[in-house]
Length: 481
Image (cartoon, rainbow, N blue to C red; front, side):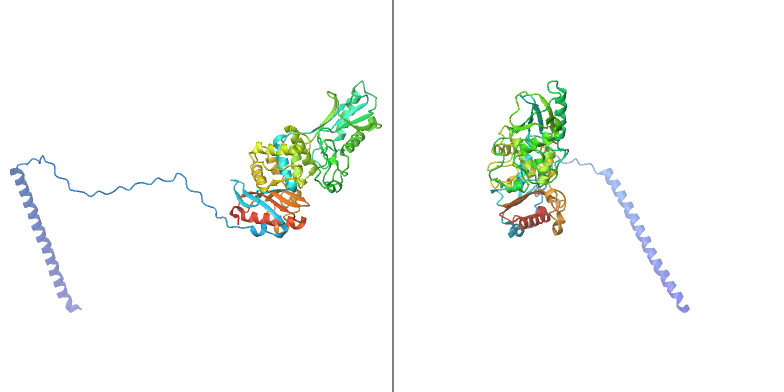
């Protein structure tokens, strides 16, 4: 209110005066104190003598000892994480359709066994045997090896000798089921040209065709095989001279085979020679030493034949590869020579323990063959790593739902593994088998070998396929329980 404004201003002014007067008094006292202290100090400096420091060092105060912590050494490498394997396929491996089951699964990267059911038991393999045969052939013969069929001049006038080098893929005509096969027509053209160019034979007929199949010795049919394989058309007699795998239909995978592949080859050669040999007699015999060559043709390389043998499961081609491997190793040229040749070749080349292997044929048709699942997976580890020339074999394995004998398997609910399983199939009356490489769902790579002994064809294959899909889904988390 206007009537009270003057007293408030008066009090405020008095309060400011008191405060200002206090600060002034403090400043006056402080200044005097500082001036007096300076004067006292100056007087002391002028009148007080300097005292020398004592020569006796002061006694140090006792101090407590604090322990210095020791540095622990740091690890140079971190411990690898432990994989927890809790994914089980035990129920699938116990399926009734498998009959008596034996099997092994390995981690391809480390070779460690993740799953095993009697994997150290030696049993019949069916056509999984072709994995061993092909690996041995690639190692001993080499992927570039070619088989040569020759014609030599005979000792008698008018005689030529057709010498089999073991090439079962030789075509009677221009081609057959085998890739890049040599042709009997080409061989006959070479012989006719050489016959006409020689003054001693020009213008004369070929009167005798001698057939030399002596490179292979012993039985031409393994005693443990069922002859139905021949009559129904999956397997031929094993001879060093034949055409078209001795098929009645050269272009068919399965086709009845003859009782005499050598004679069938001779007839094909005589027909290819045409008019120059129209009246020639056919007979078996041996080529004379040092005889002049009239012609020669070569097969496709072993790399091609290996891939055909495993892709189609060609029994006759596999027997040829096995026999040529034994010959090259100097083990002999009969069925019995395979036992000495194939285990030794695989052991020496890949450091595998081949003790206990029983090899009576190269195709796996025999119940007397005996190989363990552990051995097969150890070999497949080398195949997966492409050791030596084994990449050829890996590239030839049938692919799930895509190629070869797996082109019609892993379909429908099992198609999840389409293109992810590479494996050799096997089926004989007493067993269904499957062995190969799985590129699992988690990115791991596993090798496996499964034997379903005494199983039926349909249910055995279905159970093997279901088990393989289960392993694919588990991957590196697969347990042995």
